[in-house]
Amino acid sequence: MQVVVRPASANYGIWFQRSDLDLDDTMIPAKWDVAQEADLCTLLVNEAGASVSTIEHLMAALAGCGISNALIEINGPEVPLLDGSAAPFVREFLKCGIVTLDTTQRAIEVLRPVTVQKGDAVATLMPYDGFAMNFEIDFDDAAIGHQAKSLNMANGTFVHELCDSRTFCRSADIDAMRAAGKIVGGSVTSAVVVDGDKVMTPGGMRHSDEPVRHKMLDALGDLALAGAPILGRYEGKRAGHALTGRLLAALFADPANWRFVTCDADMAARLPGAGVTRHDMPQAA
Image 1: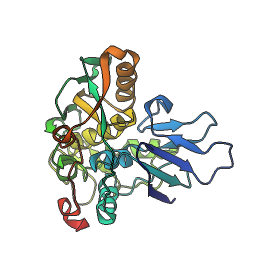
Image 2 (image 1 turned 180 degrees about the horizontal axis):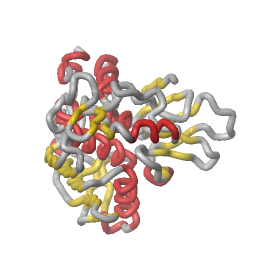
Image 3 (image 1 turned 120 degrees about the vertical axis):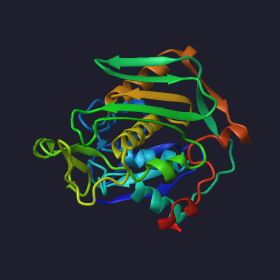
Image 4 (image 1 turned 45 degrees about the vertical axis):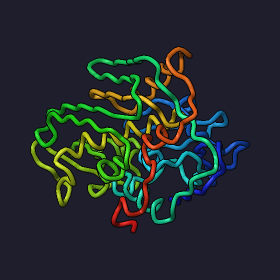
């Protein structure tokens, strides 16, 4: 599988292109309204049937580095897991350098609270003068248990705090996921694998709260499907890809929930990725 991320002009947005398909339309916009609910990942499908899945880590890396315009060429149906985090993408973006385009930055301002819920899982977007996240998870496995974290995402927080946090699963789930055609190219080195109170992945966790950090990483990637940076506060409790997708649909369902704003310098500086350089990630310097 090969993924090539190419620069794009202002207001282009983020698009995927399936270079391996012989269809009338192989271009897939990275937008919430072409997302379909899928287990364990985020799936985009265009009107011609071209699809790409497991996009959330790459989308998080783009958003966390402040990249709003790019063409992503991929010769298969699924973005590779790599090490299970967004760090490999972030490292390469920062090595190559990020160009600030000579145009104004638009953002989506959340005007009033919007909440979606399914069972005991809840996701909310509410007004905020930057972008912040609060996430809470609760698992029976003692290796994870209850974890909660809050972060203001300005000043390179994604690169410093979240980008290297890997996806996680139970040991018993791996065979079932592979049988279902998921985690193609994945292994115990592509995720934090737990079994009760044990961490099966060599080297253990990168952070004591790596699972909740990864859930925040996923949420940032899914929220990037809004099509522009969000000015608001996201709160998730046991939320996953599908619920965050429903949250975006609920946000845009009522024009009273949001508006586009043109960011001044102070506002733009509060967005994720603003001012990030290769020195924010030593491995990219």
